[in-house]
Image 1 (cartoon, rainbow, N blue to C red):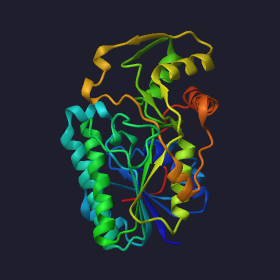
Image 2: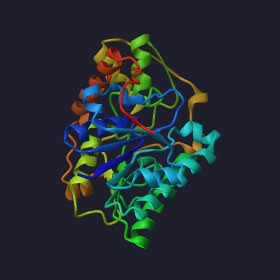
Image 3: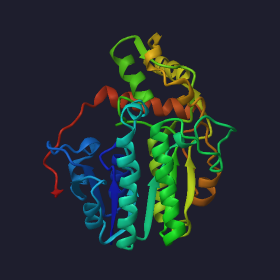
Length: 331
């Protein structure tokens, strides 16, 4: 069996996908952003007996030669590597160009050169900007309201162009605000949860924006379904969302209810995005993903959201960062 190369494997979605694919019997190569401490990020949360079945490779998608070498004899590349975080993109836009655009182009060239059969690229709902209509289909205009979203729009366009220009088998999956265990504390739901566990005061920015929060296991299920499919790698783009949206304030109320704790909310202007950069509402139409992949998210609606938040709270209550340097590495 040829191997699946997963970039951004040590990240939030990436680590869940690695774990799921190994358990399903796939041969996996994990590209981990090189660091001098041999830290493997969220892959540390996977049991050693499972993770030992994967090849762990330290490197960087900005290194063209490296990605060509490691993608040899791979049947698929799943690109989850990206520089994320909208606030930082205001300060370091060039970094987002280097990683999200140039890095993606390196992977596309590697896939083309090595005749990789499937290229799955991860987009983001942020490419749409504020909803011009809801639910948002894949035909919704893309509006770059931040340097981050601009870099992802460009990366998506590159992927589409390689399908049309070189017949590379590509599929773009566009998650809507995935959340769950292992997510960075900078994301909105973990930010609220971690502050709520420690005390009662919640320091945030704008409380009004609405997002379509999708539980990580549902997002990962779509990636696995895409790997199984042999029919739809024709430059398609698929939204991965629930079709429900919730404000930040609604999330706080959920966390407060689950923890049985009255929370004090402090909305700080310095945490707001620039007014023209704020994305007010994102709500997905997932009809295309349901039709093509037969994907159906399990945690949907208010009850699904509450279950997902409870699972996330339990994770942050019981897990600390794990440092594990005793796994199999390939340099």
